[in-house]
Length: 491
Image (cartoon, rainbow, N blue to C red; front, side):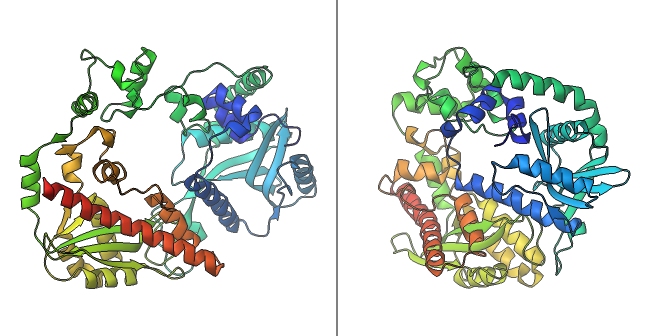
């Protein structure tokens, strides 16, 4: 990557953990594989950065042709500034083997105005540290920095027609916050260079720092010694407590003794794990079932959250429903019928989504979901954006009940659930022949990413494949609910 030893990203890694920095620099191939969700988050950051360039049009992009040519990018930036180029995108600077790439630089007679663009909706301490490092590099290259700002997304912006970039983005000066950090930056640059000069990986054990500010890229690499059924699988206790147990030498669930103080849920989880006896509260289950009225609808939604609102009457990161699955049973012994809807990518999916859903759920009977707060909130949001449907949506909301409740409250609990009441754990524990593992899309985050990709996909075969995968996943969610209810009824 050219002659630099440190960059913005490696500096942040070093602040988190010296071992993280060292592994990232010299053992990159050992890094945990990026998930599709992580890739989507990185792409979102890049896309938002490009979009923010609209705030300062007619700039020149100084990006290198490849990640191995930053020396050329630094030279190019220097030439552009010397030639009085007004606006530069992806401006590269190198001081003392530390590389800084600024998203937007505005070159004025009185100095540079630097803008760092973030796809988040607020400014974090990590962003301040990131900006402080950039200021240190650029100013030490001999440039006067008039101001340094962070540009981020305004989550209160509601799209009405064409995007309004001035309203979509918030720009906030952080100059007063980063100036006092310049000595801290220099001290850490010196420290990290010493770390990278070592011939062996720093000896640092896992701890709370593995999650702050982000989950470490070598999370799994550093946890190879943690067995299955460890104290980290306990539910209902704080992360600090888990690491206190770990540091005291208690790692396996089998190592926990009765004198260790645990929360109610964690103790229940441990007791069931050690006894291998299922916990079944038949009375509570019977009360839950007696509150259900057939015919029953088993309902599940999928949503996506574009950082930049794509449709009128929507905000950044608003969850936009694009798909539902319904299984319908007229009575306890009846066969479940399946109904589904998957929007076409290209337009706002919400109108067709709600019109089809209202048609498929008309009539009496309860509507079962797994975690009713999610579907209820999505319906309320549609009612707010499209008031014509408000009255009938409220009728559907009043019929919704939550199948998650008996598992959340431990009316039915088995050690195979590993302390979780997520349907991804409950289903294989109670219905072993059913599983999400063999599905191409097997969780909501992937479904969200997959559908958003359809707005840009041109390969018809790939479009058909993604739509089929989305259909199979959403259908599994509601079929799983049918089988789980039947399991409870069989008790």
